[in-house]
Image 1: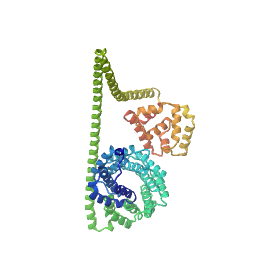
Image 2: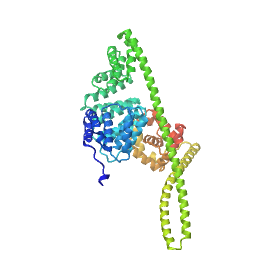
Image 3: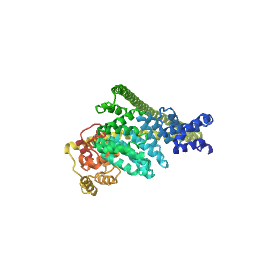
Image 4: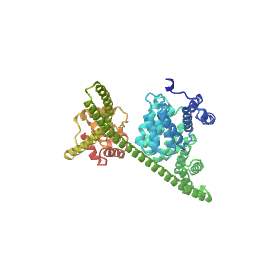
Length: 548
């Protein structure tokens, strides 16, 4: 039993793990010292633990990851050890690939980390980090609706843990997601909420919220409000936010025609180490409004530098495009390998059936000719035992084949259901609202929400009541819908379908869900694609869903 129990790590390493949580800036030097002195004496488990801690310390100190070599070895080591560090290693795999610009692979590791996260784990802070980072990456590739649930769950964990600091960070992230989606009212509401929670937090955190609010006001054309907010925040933001703050300030002061301050901030932005937002600095410094502030020879210098900056910018975009193409190729390669594995598995099942059948015939033949003697009886028992074992293998194979047949049956049912629904629709047109729904309390409440222009959040208990009423009216509604979309039914899809079933118009849906009308049209089009594989018109898809 001792040999099977988890081995304790070297105490020096466990101590540094604790230091990373409290004072991460001290950890890299300690780890480098241990690496140079003690690594040769470490057991295999401690060597991998050391590598894991070096990656963790690098991440906690905001040092950009530039190679995936070490993390891949660490993940591979922990993947078959049933170790509590496995899901954390997957998380840092996502962080490494995020820094390297490989968003699809980073998201893949974050999702694996969530899938492998133990339900009874007390480390909810790590889970919140995984959720938050997933939402951040989805926002960066403009998948705003997909990002929101991850960030909201991270906020809920922060609230549960009374972790005000991380909760505020995630509220700011959610506000930023809505800001990028140009849902400014929601973004402003969240950023003001973050401000309210920041009363006992460092001033830099409040300043970050005000900085983001200033950008929203600027986008809305409220230049006076934007100017007030950026003045209150520009000198208080953290070094990590300084770049964006200067970029916002440069644009806001320029539009407010406070040219001397716009010049100062543009000049500071230009001379930061990071290339982020340098384009904004050059555009401002080369604008007609600032021409009198800058000597002619300096303007020529800026023009030359700006040209070089743009060339580098386009080169980096081409490089990123090449990376994305490589990632897509790797994904296709992975899919081909999966298809090969499935083909091999199918052939293996056929071979097992053939061998099992031959063995069965052979056993019966032997029993037929030798069943008169005791020796034959003994062999008979042995053969029967062997057949039982073969039958177990056959049962396992049959289970896999049945799964395949079920998939084929499901596909046939789905096509029949689509054909039947389209036939009914073309013959009879739209279906009137069910009396069960029409007379229900939940439907009347829905009409009140529309009248009062109230927004229903995705986790509101109201949805459960609406679902119960619709299922009471149409018991197979959800099952048929899942069959049509091949079980790819998201919460957003389902809520949209419930409202369509209740004959709610797109403009009313936009009010209830707090979305634009175009976003609602997009959701209905998504349902059409999931069901029919193409856009067949929102009117048709509405009628089809009402027929379910």
